[in-house]
Image 1: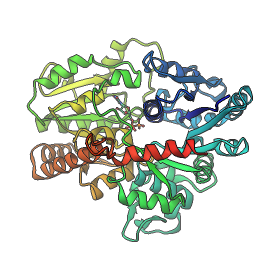
Image 2: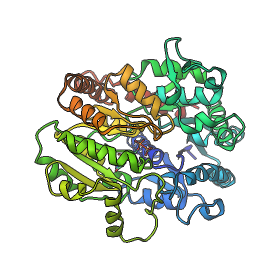
Image 3: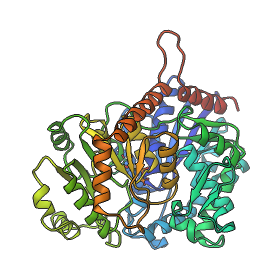
Image 4: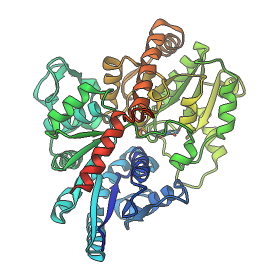
Length: 498
Ligand code: UDP
C-alpha cells in the first residue's frame, strides 16, 4: 500500500490567525493538487470550524476537523471560541489559557490518525501559540513546523521582548533588544500593556514565554512575510530564534478578486456593493480608510477626537465603528442592531452622524467592513490602522500607505518597521493611554493625502506592492519563481523528503 500523507494545520483561536492558516491550506492544496496521496486537514474548535466551512468552496479537498471545546468551562460565554468574539478584552486572556486545554484532544486525534493507517505519514504546521504541540509531535515522530502569522521583525521583537524582558534591566527610555543591531532601539511606550506590567511570573508571561520556548524546538519556522521586504527582521528572527531556515511564504493575502465576505465569514456592516458605489464617487487616492482590526477598539475620548479631526480636515473617510473600550461588545448576543447604532451617537460628537451620513465626506460602517475591497479601490489613499500584520500586508499589497495607531502585541514593532525601514507609515498615536488632539488628526490626514510626505509614502508603498507580487509570481518564459513560491517548494519538499 502506498504511503499517504496528511498535512495538519492548527491555528490559534483568533481571526488574524485562522484566516492566514486557511490561506496557507489553500496554497498547499494548489501546490500539491497533482498528488492524490496528499491530504490537508485544518483543526480548530467547533464554532471556528463551522465558520471556516462556510468559507471553503465545495470543491475543496481541505478537511476541517473540530476538536471538542467547552468555552463555558473556561469562563467564556457560550460559542465564544476566538479572541475577536470576546465581549471584553479580559476574556481574550481566557481564550489563550483555555486553548491549552485542547492538548489531550489534539493528542488523541493525531494518535488515532496514525493508528488508523500504518502507511499514513503526518506533518504538522502549528501556530507559534500552539507550540505545545511540538513535544507531542516529537514523541510521535511527526515532522513539525511553526507558523508565525506576524511579520519577521514583529515576531523577532515580540519573542526577544518576552524571552529577555530587556526593559526591566534598564531605566533608559530607549533600550536595546537582544538579537538586534546596536542601533535598533525601542521606546518604552512601544511596549504593549502586558509586556510593560509583566514581572516574569504572571500567567500571561508563562503562556507567552513557554509558547515561544517550545516553538524554538520546531524543525522549521514559517513566516507570513516576503524575503525582500524584511531583511532586518529576518536577520533578527534568525538571531533571536537560532532557527536558520525561515520559510518566507507571504503574503498570505489574496492578491486578486478580493471578496472579504468570502474570507472572514463575518457579517458585513454594509453591503459591499454600497461601499464600493460610495467609493466610486470619489477621485483617485482621496479617501482614508480607518479600522482597528478584528478585536481592537479605541476609547470614547479618542473616538471624539478622531471624529472632530476628520470632520474639520474636510478629507473623505470610511470608518469602521465599534463600541469604544469599556463598553461591552455585544457581537455574540441577540441585540437590536438599530439600538446599538443609536448608541453610536453617544460616542461621536453631537450631530456628527447627521452631518456625515449621506454626504461624500464620510461613510460610517458598523463593526465589519469589506476591508480588502476598500483597500483595492482606487479612491483609497491611506489606511489608518492598528498595524495588525494582516491589515499591513493587505494594505501594502494594494500599494496603500498607512497612518499607524498601534494598540497591542507586536503592532508597535510593525509600526516602527513600516516607518523606519520601509517609509510607508506615519504614526499618529500609540495605544490608548496617550492623548491625541483633533488638530493633530487633521494635520496628519491632510499631510498624507496632499503633502509631500504622503506622496513619498505612496511611492514606497507602490514598491512594496511590486515586491509582494513578484514574490508569488512565476515567469512564464524562464519558469523562474519568486522568492515566496521557492520557499513554499522548499517547505513541501522538506515534508515530502522526511
Ligand atoms: N477585517 C475586515 N473587516 C473589518 C475588520 C477586519 O475584513 O472591518 C479583517 C482584515 O481584512 C484582516 C483581519 O480582519 O484580514 C484583521 O487582522 P489583523 O492582523 O490586521 O488584526 P487583528 O484582528 O489580528 O488585530
